[in-house]
Amino acid sequence: MRPSPRTIACLLAGGWLALAAGCLQIDTTVSFHEDGSSTITERLNFSRTLLDMASQQDAKLQIETLLTREAALTRMQQMGKGMTLVSHKIQDGRNGSREAIAVFKIPDLNDFTYVSPWLAYLDYGENNAIKWSATPMYKSRPYGGRGTGAAGSIAIGFQHVKKQPQGAARETPDKVITPVQAQVFRELGPMFRDVLQDFQLKLTFEAYAPLHYGPNPRGRSSRAKSVDIINITDKDLDRYGYGFFENEEIMLDLVQWDIGSSDVAEHLKDYGANQTLPAFTPFGSKHMWWIGYDGNAVYLPPSKQLFDRYFPGKKLDFAQWQASPPDKHVLADWNQVGYVPDPGEKGRTEQKAPAP
Figure 1 (cartoon, rainbow, N blue to C red):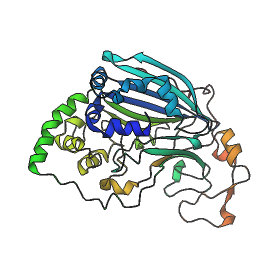
Figure 2: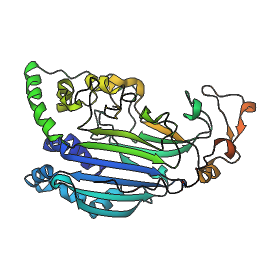
Figure 3: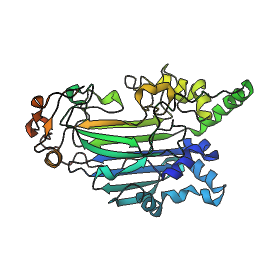
Figure 4: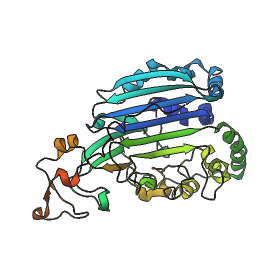
């Protein structure tokens, strides 16, 4: 879901391009394979309106160059060691848009760094990179029953490279605007809604095995092999069943780039149970402080390759809270914690380029 961190910060947080962000679609899938490698597929789409607007601005802001193979190779250098570009193509999208589809491969997910989808951080311009990891779990985590963070699992984490001071967002005072300023922002709302037509910001994680848990709790009980970490479009609704971007209070905050406002947080907090809401947890918002500030994790059983890499001879502690006595630890057993695919399942998680 990139251009580079610096570029995406400009696209989503700077000047007139922020206004045109609704003419933008960024759709990324991170596919985790049984050997610990990952395939990253990006679709970056710019609408005709956005391209025309860019052509009228400073030449340095010519965004169509971000669709090129050269731009993909430049981004690749920032994603981690061993990253290779598998394929790249530019094609026409719908309604005169142009888009690039790039497929990257990285041998070890632990080396992967990507742009953060959590735009609610107040310092997003400088804090826009997340580090991915695949970590064996030798002890269960709190609330780790039924495979959710249980010992013997592989934890897929995505944490900010730049750590946030605990409680920093909570200590930040709310924005205060005058009635005149509020009126100006409200008048800008309809214009923003117009440019948000066909907007999409999406980041999906998928794997070789069913996921025990994801930051999007919609997939908790479905044994799905993929989860949308973030998925926001102009078609989403608010908690009352009206258009999310049609909500005046939400739009008043978004026009001010207050993505973690109390209004936004109030509508998004139940998105796990309400599939018409955007899939988005505003990490960095002081109005959702209980969710933490360092991202989240997805859990899945180890493949045979990953089990052989991390677990032979290791003892597992299934206690969810305090560590249990050593005599209660259990030797890791593939038959107990490993993932055996169903017949005919091989190759199902190979990532294909998303449809235009």
